[in-house]
Amino acid sequence: MAPVLPVFGQLTPFPATPLYARLEKEGRLARPKHWLEFAPFRMAHDPLKITVPEVQEEVRYAWANSYSPAATGRALDAITNEPAPYKISHLGSRLFFRGIYFPQKGAWQWLKLIAQNRGPMGRIVKDSLTQWRGTGDDGRTEDFNRGSRRAAYPAQPEPEPGRD
Image 1 (cartoon, one colour):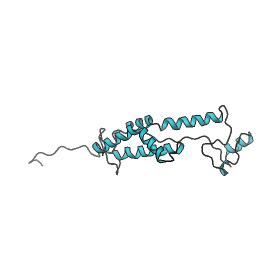
Image 2: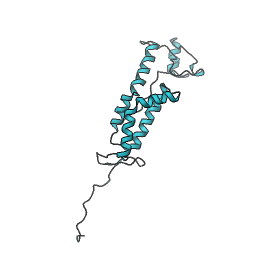
Image 3: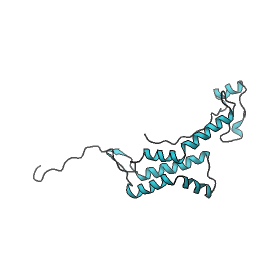
Image 4: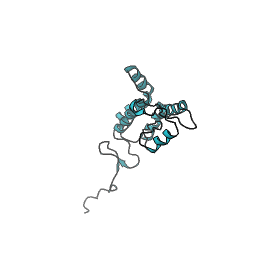
């Protein structure tokens, strides 16, 4: 299964939607005009059966565990036979997606993030030097620019000389 790049957030009631109308009727809109004062990852309503801090902790946990160095390593394991440019692209995307919730706001934070992910990065450097086009262990032809595809026809044996 190919790795994914999940994005997490809490439910947001937008004006002129049935959800907004219901929450307004129930008196659960904590910030009725939340769209006028954008505050990322801040709840605009009071949820049922869970507190706002619990929701915030669940979202933080989801981001932290989905974009941890261990999760990045597992994601790269899932695409181990793919071409190196695909792996590089996926790793870069994971580092930038992580920045949606945990922004790297300076060189020191970026260096720290790179150090935390040195294992997956080292593996990609090695693969870039040894398996640029991927291994194709499953019979596919690997080419990052044209995508992965199966051969249209099985390889035909060479004809014997003198036989047509």
